[in-house]
Amino acid sequence: MAINSSGKRLKFCNFKLDALLEITTAINENLSVDKILETYKHILLDELKLGKVVVFAKTFEWELILNSSSAKNEHPGIDVEKDLSGHEEITSTSSTQNTNLSAYDFIIPVYHDINAIAYVLIGDVDEEKEGVSPTIKHLRFIQTLTNIIFVAIENKRLYEESLKQERMKKEMELASQMQSMLIPDTSLFPKNNILNITSFYLPHFEVGGDYFDFEKLSDTDYFFCIADVSGKGISAALLMSNFQASLKAYLNTGIKLPELVRLLNIRVVDSAKGEKFITFFAGKYNSETRELQYINAGHNAPFLYDKKTKTLQELKDGCPGIGMLDEIPFINEGFVNVVNASKLICFTDGLAELENDNKEEIGLAELEKCMSNEKSVDENFICLQKTLNLKKGNPALFDDITILGIDFL
Image (tube, rainbow, N blue to C red; front, side, top):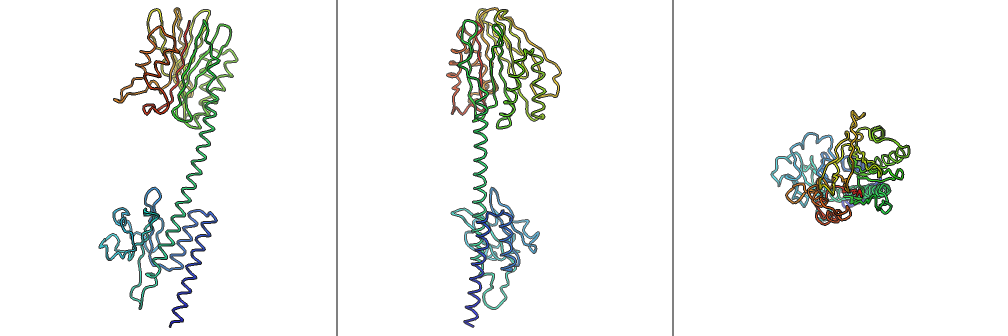
């Protein structure tokens, strides 16, 4: 009898070693979670011959991971948080007096550090046999095996998540580089006795969806624009990059503003497939005639302030946003004669929708206050930045803020 008992113990020890080797090999070979769970199920059901086994495991929330065929439809009433949470040791269900667990014999909790990561329910334990049921002798081993399995699965998930985060970080860095390429070198903007142009750009995240630009078309003609793409991230940066490239190419042809907007709409529709659109304000100024032509394509209306008459007007004439519709139904071009010394300030949603602590929009009110004077746009921008605390780290800022200012002297 002693020899027979010793032989059984040796056999079971060898089985445990083989099972652990099989599991660790599967983990080390980086097999899929499904393959690892298949191996785990094979050990429990085929090798240990458990009559009934159900396993709940937690990733983001509790999930039913394993359900032996004989246990189907016997656990629908089990709520892990209510019925299993709190069990820190292997427990006989008969001691719980919980009717939801009546189909099972044992609860095997599995912890990692101080957190429960799995619960194993074992049923059909034959306790009528002479001596101790073999299943009961396996409970600690099942607990250890389950711990190894689900810690490995969680580590695998965390590793894959870290790889995903690293990929996203690299993508965001790439998008940020692309975005910075779109922002013009403002030191090259004119500051003379005809025009004084300045800008302010504050992206909310690494990648912004705003764009602005300025081009001298001839000795007397100047082009400027500001734009905001719906959405953020790589796709938004790519769309805006494509938009900028198309805009630059069209400008070199001496194109009229309405035709420019129409062609840009075609390009954005083709590129975005209706998933994104761009609000866009474009203007042309002739320093000889002092005429300002513009089209507002769904953008926030810029403010034009006449320093002599002390009047403020919004430039609203235009059309729907670029890419909102397959074909733009109308394009209304606006014309303003800038008779007196004036200044124009264009801006994006980030400024327009800026709120105070009472959720009241204050961005445009402060803009109007700061620019309703004879000061230059440079001085107005300093006023805005100070008044609205326009800097990184301000929790009130929830979108990119771009401002383009022009003094017509």
